[in-house]
Amino acid sequence: GLYNKKLFFERAIEASHKALSYNFPLSIFIFYIDHFKNYNVKNGHVQGDVLLKELSKIVKENTRTTDTIARYGGEEFIILLPNTEKNNAMLYAEKIRKLIETHPFQYREKQPLGCLSISGGVATFPSDGTTIETIVKNADKALYESKTGGRNKVTTYKPLQFSAEEETQETV
Image (cartoon, rainbow, N blue to C red; front, side, top):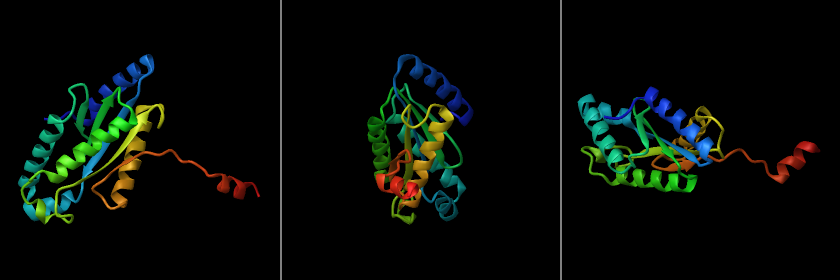
């Protein structure tokens, strides 16, 4: 019952034009279900489909109607949050993460973390990029940081910054 990737990008491009015209932020939250392959192997693909539908329902019920939720890939989801600053996007993303972590999904205790969990990333226009593609790419980088940092967390994209010490070393 969610949008697909193509429709997501159509909506995202429309929202980015509005964000530019009215000078308001636009955030993207991308997340993936931790160890979903493990869930499918242990419980079967039918149960995996049930899980996807149940998770989608949780996300839809806790998301504004002005936002766009889409299935981005197999176990990956993406949400467009128009007129949403990065801090508010992180609050929303963390709320979704906690709802999923605490929801009594069937067979959740068989998961490696003892619960069903997600790892996610957030990026915001215009501070994290000037195109939808760049914002999605940067949200995905933050997602990767969540995955490699232990999972079951949401990370905000942080543009690469150099310290004064690094600059001094480069010029010497």
